[in-house]
Length: 155
Image (tube, rainbow, N blue to C red; front, side, top):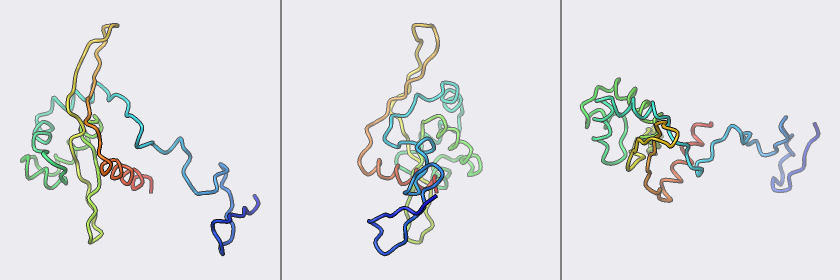
């Protein structure tokens, strides 16, 4: 590999291209999820499992605004150790969204919020069950928070 001159990095030596030919140190696009892309429909069984669980329903009922796991546990009456497992279940089912609460002390915390308005279970023309999760439009602040959350996961 040869050095590559990068004029925007004045006063710094050129960087080498990586094995994929990227000069900017970015991740291959196959590894990075586009936070603006529409999410695929969630798995029917994951949604049914989450909605069938009484603790998951308690958590969803308690989430009036974004909350940390500790706050959710207090508000729902679900033990904290169980709350973490149920938050994973609800997030995997695309019923909750995990964001990041930025704190001035540097001890940032995950916050969870409801990511749906309606869940519809239907029957397709092929007589197979389908699930459709209606989501509310995201604000610019929510989209930016989602991008930062994705960056955090990648680093």
